[in-house]
Length: 305
Image 1: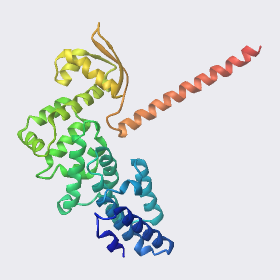
Image 2 (image 1 turned 90 degrees about the vertical axis):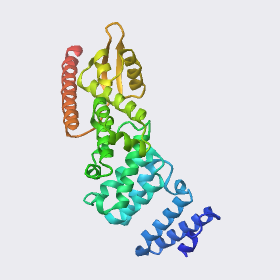
Image 3 (image 1 turned 90 degrees about the horizontal axis):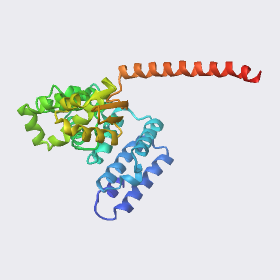
Image 4 (image 1 turned 180 degrees about the vertical axis):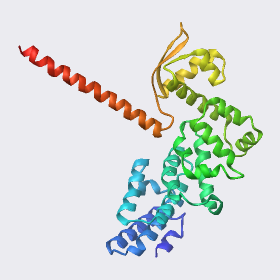
């Protein structure tokens, strides 16, 4: 019956979705556990084919993730079933850069240990996730994707090794790293073939280089920034302003001294080093609060006297 309902993706699609949803509810009410997951996959696949996933999974990434994780938890889905479920959802949202990024972080870790050479569908999805993320002018940071084992495995792939190096350069490198990579004929050819914009990548690399510079020093000279970004010094202020507007750094520009004074910069990635740094900062903050409490406690008896 479900197969009949899902066989037509052009006529009365909303009604067919409701009927498939009713069948899933009936399966759950009758506790037909062996039919539950296949029925869910048929429903999701149909909704994906007919552009009706939003009513089923919710409009936001958070709601979509919560819904899927609820199925995983309550139905105790196996790793293989989770792969199948997240794979269909990944494909459904592949044109949306933000959704692709979020779904990729759920789907690809489920494939740790699998070989890209023997999993063509996995490789295809991985290339899709990386290229969509790189193409997006709004998705600046891709460090979480770059750190995934399957992405690192891609660096050994004859066809897509360039893509892995490109993601790595944008995730943790400086502008000079990206510029050197782009100068290689194989990189430029790959980017042209897969419609990866050099100007978009240049912009990302320069903005993220400002973040790295801001972590290295709280006072940045205009000429040092210009050298790191590979731009004339008169363009420095425009790049810094853009980084500030995007919330990448909190800083002020001293046009007289020609320096940028940094008060805060976002982390480009969050690994062990950043965790230790956060712990140290929290420890210092705790000591400061403890000292303040002691001062207040000492001051109270004196005021009362």
